[in-house]
Image (cartoon, rainbow, N blue to C red; front, side):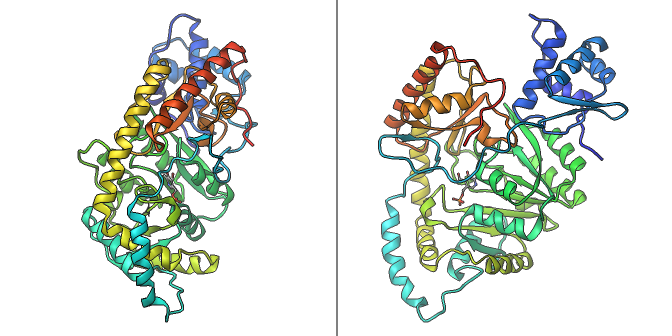
Length: 477
Ligand SMILES: Cc1ncc(COP(=O)(O)O)c(C=O)c1O
């Protein structure tokens, strides 16, 4: 069965149309925006004209004219007897490829959303150097990871309410490595993988390289539309779903507990494995309870949780992990051996030592990020008051909705004034999200304030030079 969106659901997503232009143009624009914003994925069948007209309380003629507009703009294609389908054909492929470049000194780098190392790192390195003596008589090949680190990581899950044995953990060289192993084991080329839109760009690039067929499901201003996600999962029956439920990168949203539970239940029926990226889970900035982990609802071994030292500790360590059943851990280790990539013993020893001071390190991270977030938010309110955003309760970035679909253009202009950014299209599957920009708050407050001043000047300059707004996303090389 193809994927479709029901008339009441689409009507709800469209909301109230503006009335200052002919209705059919407003309707066509609103549908176009849902496609541009990645909230309606590629190849989704729209409701029949009559059904949408009834659900919206408008005339069928208006819907017919709107669909005609959308067809003319190649936003939908219609086939007699089959219906009308959203289309991203002819747009560029995912822009998210490769690593963010490190940049040079005077550039304010807001493309890379990561903190510098915590001060505790150097002491952990010193002690780990001594620990290493215990392992030098061993070959040093440990495809499952260092036992002491697996224990520490298992304890972390148990403390979060999911009883976990060290046998259920494999240590990897970071979250992306974890995703790579999972894809190799579970999803061959051409298999469907459900992803959020927007989502983490390097995961998109990896899925693209793995030949996955992406099915996207959009996040709206309030986060996941639960009914739409459950529907999409049931309709598409993907092999995997890659989800970022905790302080989602880039939007900062947190998935409610109920939807976690429902997704786990539906995944059982659709035979979908849920790859849950918890890289940002420790970074809640405003206190308060965090929903239970996905794994706590899993009775059928459908959840693979991916974690990392990168955000709460340091990306330079390259230490991550996967929590799943002991049996799947063994299979993943076999894949890791085949690929020949793993995390070094010394890095794992450092990680194990750092985890001993996790309470202090993470508390300091949260305080640092909260202060930087507040400085960024204040600067945005002052210099770019027309941009809209939700203040995230955690994570590393603000996801700003711009005043026009100029993200790629603005990113280019900002390069010229020494601010490196990742524009909205980086986070989408196929040339979408031009109205959005991710602004990480991982740099010190004065840098963030200076960056926002420069971005605001670049934005004003775009208008002054009266460059045309993009009707199609620019190619990012
Ligand atoms: C959701 C998410 N997953 C994974 C990563 C990268 O993690 P790692 O450095 O462990 O590969 C990031 C980094 O920003 C992220 O935001």
